[in-house]
Length: 116
Image 1 (cartoon, rainbow, N blue to C red):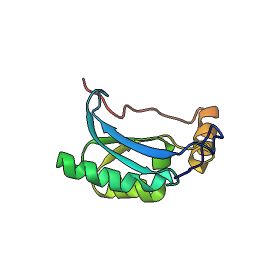
Image 2 (cartoon, helix red, strand yellow):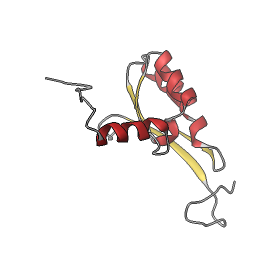
Image 3 (cartoon, one colour):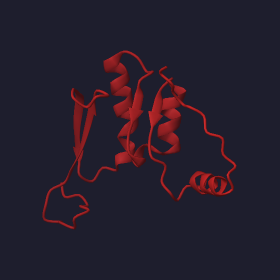
Image 4 (cartoon, rainbow, N blue to C red):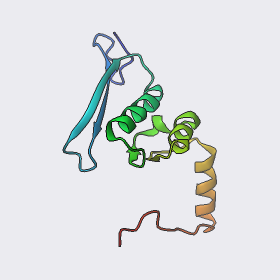
């Protein structure tokens, strides 16, 4: 199906390719092809659920682009014992609050993970 291409090429067929890999990036775990017109943000919950089934656990870290950053997606993963890393779109109020605190030096940074 013809999707909306960022390169403005309506003559080319589009697809959305979902690929799950190991943390080192060397081993593909699973993949799925979607119609080129699908919105990426609706693919994350089924994908995360599929990974949870495949891995038989939910405490892995799910890393995805900003399309993961929706209340529905993040709540689903968190309420089911999962962890995630994503990019927060810059137009979100949380980003504006963070930048204001950063400018005023009102931040205290803490390690999220320390392997030592």
